[in-house]
Image 1 (spheres, helix red, strand yellow):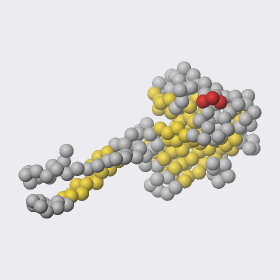
Image 2 (spheres, one colour):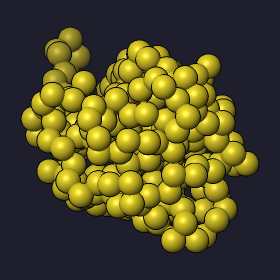
Image 3 (cartoon, rainbow, N blue to C red):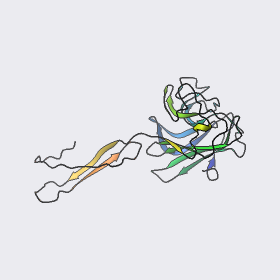
Image 4 (cartoon, rainbow, N blue to C red):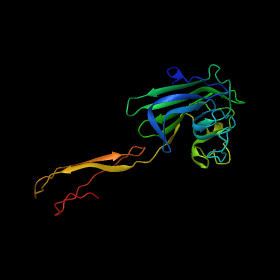
Length: 239
């Protein structure tokens, strides 16, 4: 939790969202940004409305930017009461060091509409990999009907929990991932960089060669190996 260490996101009320500046460029579906909008209703947004408390399905098909977020990430999009009133807080903090920093936005001690139980959850954006992580506290909401997913544009997105569909978001206490996290990321994308080797090879003599493999994807690659095959062809070939 960053409820005691993070900076309070300024400007947030029941009627206005806030904005945080990122110390690194983050790419969401190919759209790069150095800042992100923060809604008091449990989502981050790049476009569309900032204070929609009535959640709908994700990805949705409503193009009204006045009523609904359009490009956004929703760890727990729902209606909340007592926004801006202690103990409810929305905070921001950067963890780690470049080039592997993590920007964390936390909704702490939020009170879903109609519930007497407060909940806390986070959205983390990762430098370099552009991965997204939703993290959840151990206490589930007493009453809730939230949407949990990410959306690039109308009719384009990825569901986070099965209780969120294109029709509606109906995530409640039974769907709350207590003490767990959801991650959205691109798969590993490997490419060969610099390749070098001895100019000549001789029978019975070790041949020295190196290769640099770069991962341009969004997730760690494991069990990766590089093999060199020697032939009578004097030209170094890559395949």
